[in-house]
Length: 270
Image (cartoon, rainbow, N blue to C red; front, side, top):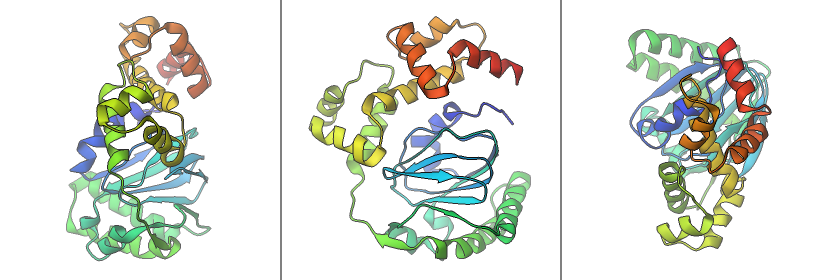
């Protein structure tokens, strides 16, 4: 498993493959940019820590924490230490018994830390092992139905009247054009929205500035490109959409706490 499993290897999934595929992985790091989809997303932190955001609210995840995202909630993961994380993404229709719950609202709180995870983690790990060996099956669906049956009582649901259309349009547009010279005004103009609407969505629903979000997409591209040793740091900055090497270095240091050169050396060591 790649120690540097940053958000680059998930970018294509966010708005394309996740919409049509069952995703189930054990990872040693999670660091995905803000995204939204029609699926259920469940993360179990067996060991590790970091901050997960859901609809603008931050949650500190530590050992034994379950993080549950309902369909159409904006979520992201930041500053996660190396550890052991289980990530499951599936459609409500994969859980027929509970799909109506996922259609009616969202949890009052997206994270819950359990002291005793033996039975729940057994269901999760057994389902993952079977999935890795045989692919998706009715047996896996049964394990997951049992898992969510035990988990959902810890996540009381309240009705939500939020319409996600503008959020989805903005995030999809930014994902497709992040290498361009984007501003709040240019995105608003292209999507026929007001700049204040775009700014409001970033501040309230995503809880990060527009520029930080665009930089997170560019940095994801940069860390993925770093695997190719044929590119210099300056070339990587240009390919990722940064206008100057200085801007790239500053954004990289802010996000990862080290220079691009140091990060690349650490990648090589691992």
